[in-house]
Image 1 (cartoon, helix red, strand yellow):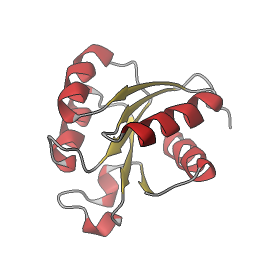
Image 2 (cartoon, rainbow, N blue to C red):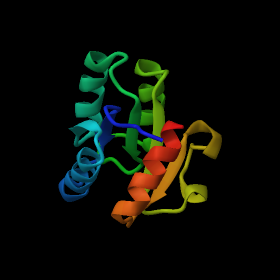
Image 3 (cartoon, one colour):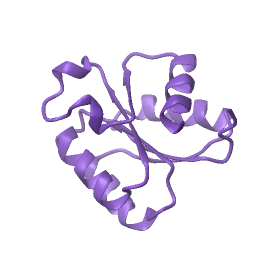
Length: 123
């Protein structure tokens, strides 16, 4: 399946992880935008409208709980798929059920894992 040209919004507070994700995605033909906090993401969400196919959301942001950020993403981008990331297992994440997201990526991850999870989330 070809997903070239799909647009991905990365919400990740760790610069090195965000840069790595963005690099991997752009090498795979995606376009991407990054927000490094919940506040930055929320500001960008209102401008993105329908311009995003997938949101990669880090559960542990410093300024907002992951479940609250997920609600905001769903409010502004109801059609977008959401891939949740965390260093914790999915069953340890407070306020989020697996059916609320389109995939889960446990940190640390490698290039193949992120490519596979993104492709699966976009199917």
